[in-house]
Amino acid sequence: MSKPFYLTTPIYYVNDRPHIGHTYTTVLADVIARFHRMLGEEVYFLTGTDEHGQKVEKAAAARGITPKALADEVVANYTDLWQRMGMTHFRFIRTTDADHVAQVQRLFKRLLDKGDIYKATYKGLYSVSDEAYVTETQAKELQAQGLAHQLVELEEETYFFKLSAYQDRLLKYFEEHPDFVQPEFRFNEVKRFVEGGLQDLSISRTSISWGIPVPGDEKHVVYVWFDALLNYLTGCPGGAWPPDLQLVGKDILRFHAVYWPAFLMAAGMFQPKTILAHGWWLMGEDKMSKSKGNVVRPDTLLRFGNDALRFFFIRDMQVGHDRGFSLEGFMDRLNADLANGLGNLTSRTLSMIQRYRDGHIPAMPAFRDGATRAKEDLGRAICVQFPESARLNNFNGALDLLWDYLRGLDGYIVEKQPWNLAKDPAKAEELDAVLHLLWQALRVTAVLIAPVMPAMAQDLWSQVGMGGEVSAQRIDQVAWDAPVPERIGTIQPLFQRIDKEKEMSEIEGANAPAADAKPVLDVPELRETIDYDTFAKTDLRVGQVLEAERVPKSDKLIKMRVDLGFEQRTIVGGIGKAYAPEDLVGRRVVVVANLAPRKLMGIESHGMLLAASDNLGLPYLVAVPDDARPGFLVK
Ligand code: ME8
Image (cartoon, rainbow, N blue to C red; front, side, top):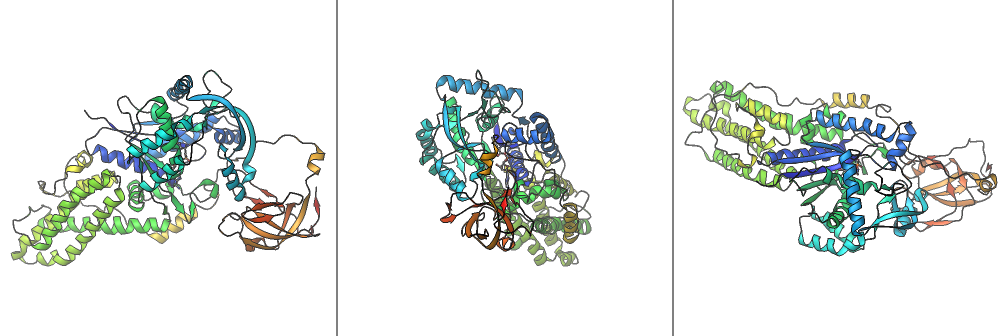
């Protein structure tokens, strides 16, 4: 027997509830899983949650609960959503599961014994928000973005994984396995990254306690990514290794295409066959994320039905590319393709069979005209091309083909005018041909769309009069000329047209601020205590912004001319995502006035504005009353 098809999604962090980005990845995986089941394969589809690390530890502390309690709370949001959406994963893995903890410790120990993991001292910069060591080049990039405040100097003992030793082997592996990463342009990015040189990877922390303890050296916990990636091993049932397909967002491709295969090489294990990196759902130009406050939750869209959401995701996103999301576009797509397109074609076809043939499906007469034959040939071709595209994970292309065909059938109906054929008894055979063709097209469509819209496909399957489960059909063997059952089933609308304006106003009403807000404070730990003299060295002044403009090529930096009473200064601030230049002019601000000047994107900035923020949100400028004059000392 052939190996089961083993498919994974990333495991999601438990510092947020699921949004449509997470939902998209999981839907895509579920569509692929259902497709492979319809190819007659046994499928294991794994998803779950990534629960350790500093972010969770801090978010839990802010709420006054244990990290595990926080994780349990968030996990319930995921498991409940996946259940409501009918996801067909065989296991929901949590990195706090006992078998996973044991797996991570076992592999850590094995690689330590083998010499692939060693202990040493790290000295350098660390980014708290990324939970990662930062190289000098990366530090410069952060500085240029005005984000240097997130960096701390660190000197700590840590365990390193000998990633550098795997550079050549990885490149050779990439060379020999052109399908290892898809799409190809992303694979090229990965190759360039590895060619640029790999440094050993720190895989333990002493500054965090919420994690899996390093076996035999328990003041260290295992770094979240070493822990998280191994979930795919823990969750793999016997006989299913290696993964056939691993879905990831493009943001985490490097971890999956470089670190993960290196860990597996060290462990002497087979590599996943393909890692497929999909793009992002964007809001405007930005990635959807909690910190930007532009998150769309799946429940907002699920009011239109689970299948409708699945269809939209798969139809609208070309795997690998980014795609802008809008609620309007979402509704337009469903109205055009499901209410008007497939829905309309179904009700037209079935009601004609009902009216003209009393619900009996006519057989195809021996004679048919050229137009009908052309549509038959095209239908037969789609039965082959659809599964071929889907095998390459190009479901968007497959649906494109099918919907083009369905649209063509609308034109065919207009051309054949069955309502006129029905009036003329001499044209009975011609009408049979039209009705039979349309019926076959609907039957085939039910099978082909079943992985994407399981419930709607079953509904269509029953409406056309077929018995049993549509998902039990072999999707790669949908014969066009299958035998015809006697009668059609009960006709009912497949998809209700959406009243866009009504829905928009209801959704906007329900989404009024606060509805989505369950603020989690994400702030750095309190810094060390200082005495008054140390504080007094900082010269804080009231300033007033005279001019402000964006720094070209940066969405964060704003260059300002600031009046400090005794002099005017140029100050560059990383507040461009929170403030527009025109809102700044005239505003009173607090300036760190005795900070040594430094260059940001080539502009010398002399001073810094005080702003309040946590690690997630946008900064708020610290305000002083209007009667505090430029030059006043803040103390
Ligand atoms: O990265 N568009 O978890 P995470 C499309 N725990 N997909 C999106 C998206 C968007 N706007 N935003 C998120 C982690 N995603 C780690 C993974 S794996 C061993 C550890 C999807 O909760 C996308 O698949 O941040 C991305 O890879 C994943 O959510 C990140 O989820």
